[in-house]
Amino acid sequence: MQDGRTTLSKFLIDTLDRKPGPQSQIGLSALLIDVAASIKTISAALTKGALAGNYGSAQSVNAHGDEQKKLDLATNDIFLQHCEWDGLLAGMVSEEMEGVYEIPEAYPRGEYLLAFDPLDGSSNIDINGVVGSIFSVLRVNGESGEAGFLRPGREQVAAGYAIYGPSTMLVLSVGNGTHGFTLERDVGNFVLTHSDIRIPEDSCEFAINASNERFWEPPVRRYVQECKDGRSGCRERDFNMRWIASMVAEVHRILMRGGVFMYPRDFKTPAMQGRLRMLYEASPMSFLVEQAGGMSITGRERILDVKPRALHERVPVILGSKNEVARIGRYHGEYDRGEDKPYTSPLFNERSLFLPDPV
Ligand code: F6P
Image 1 (tube, rainbow, N blue to C red):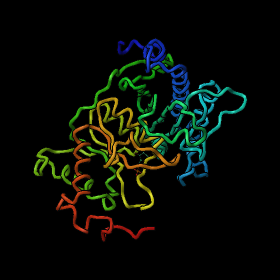
Image 2: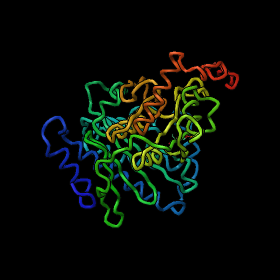
Image 3: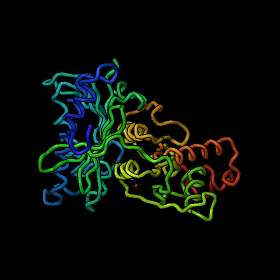
Image 4: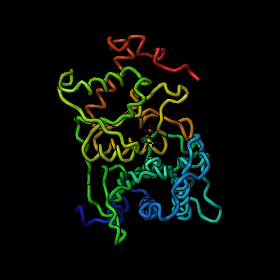
């Protein structure tokens, strides 16, 4: 398929509907077209900015206690309206809703489950920064309600995100590579512009919220310290650091030019395993990254093999260029086996003097 000539619908018909065998998923292309329609509507709303009067807080909190912005709720409704009617879904889960959204009786139920974060990185909204939407599609497996969603990410039949930047892009995988489409605004089509994206295996760029450093585990501190040591340290080359505070923007950069993104396990809030949510952040992004030749782990396990136990479960995330992520995984192994001498000091472990008392 040719970059610049293929629309999203042509791509999906060719990839899913005309291919017999395991890749053939009846109705999946139609569902993804509805997801793309939600994204176009959200893109149009975001482009209006403050003129549309939907900036600011909605004066409510979501299931995780995060403040909801008016746009978090508006974009959630856009996804529901575009996807509930088509007879393709059996249920939806979103960052902004506590439980499973049941398909209204007026509409037929279908064979797929959709999990989504309608507006990722929404703290960037008020500063006109980059935000995104993330989605994940599973096929129903006989289990209903929450249990139907609580499956390892390797079972996803499709995953993707939209990035609302200077241009709006939809990046998607249905299990045959990761492909990027750019919204041609005046026509309203998503056009294939980045086919078969490949993440470089090596990189000199990492992204992490460095203000959490004192709460990180030793293997992460070791990796970041070595990057900061640059050419005078054991890595013998200089590294660059980035932090946009929007997972979509970080993952997009990594898909375009490589790098590592980390929101690792930390002890800032000991009750939480990580910051990012499994079903609609870690799992779909890991699917896209692996389909582009990258790697995605918790530090100790492949994320796509982790079975979530709750709809809004959080998980540590380390993803990106294969050789760098493998190195961080190795550091976790060395630390766990007690082989990582300089970082096994009590000052760097879970009972460290630098950490707050558990809550
Ligand atoms: O909810 C997720 C998120 O907004 C991610 O998109 C982003 O990577 C992260 O939170 C930003 O976290 P922090 O507020 O620690 O910078």
